[in-house]
Image (tube, rainbow, N blue to C red; front, side, top):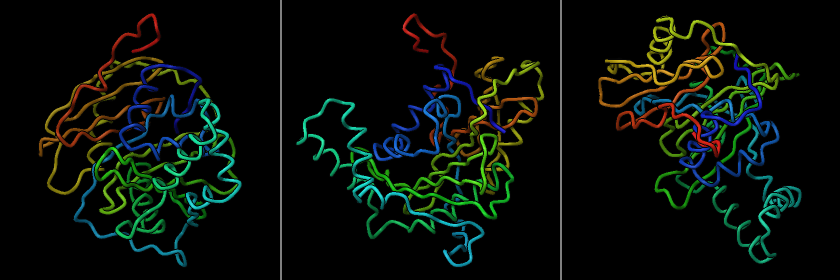
Amino acid sequence: MIKMKTMIGKTWVFAAAAAIIIGSGSVMAYALNGSIPESGTADTAPVTVAADKSAQSPSVTAGNAEYTVVELNRKYSESDGKKLIYDKLKLNNLTDEQMEEKYNEIIANMTPGEKDMTAVQAAAYAADIVKKAYDVDLTGYTAEASFSRNPAVPNSDNWGVFFRTPNETDSSNRYYVSVDSVSGAMLDAGCFNLDYRVENNKNIDDPAWVDTAVRDIEKLLPEGVSVTGSKVVVAAKELGVSVVCELSDGSAFAVRLTGENKDAAAYQYFPDGYDGSWDYHKPTENGVG
């Protein structure tokens, strides 16, 4: 669905900003997760989607789930996981004492508390949004769940869940969703594969791009909320078309479409209205857009 290429551009800014907002634990989760290519998030900005917080939690348990849930954050307290984190920290030229302090901080921010839902419950919320956004059957998938929080950001506790298909290949899609660990509200999500095929988006001025964007956003909205306006903020053959939609409750949604089928490569939800962060800015000499 989403084809990626090795690049540094506007979409990397999207991905990095989203990771920082979610929290330091999520940044480490991205860095440590072997299923994500180093250039992968550069072309697949995480998706932020609106959630109906009044909705019932999907009824999924470890015993009857269509997919298998694996809680990844536990392994980083073990010797192999600790070594993995230390190997990452060594790249920052820290002292042994600084690395131990940082490691303990990372582990604390990857450990759920009594108020937080379980990995299985989080995976249920994540599976629900993947089905809505991508219309995929998750039977047989493995849901790899990791908890994280950012101590500098109140109420940032979240579960990140990766859905991986059995017998996956480079062309297999991997899905990622993070949810608020208390309410189950959706924070972000995305889809990527390892083909690294460059999409040549054609006819980017065609109104069909906007029509598709609106339809994709509408299927994620809670009951009673509707799209009141839309505008294109990016249209480029290399990146696709990004559309921002204003919603009837004062919030906004952005979606980036790419490829021949105008697939939804990335979403972001703005609860207080669109803040301009998806607007295209021409890269400077330093490569910053």
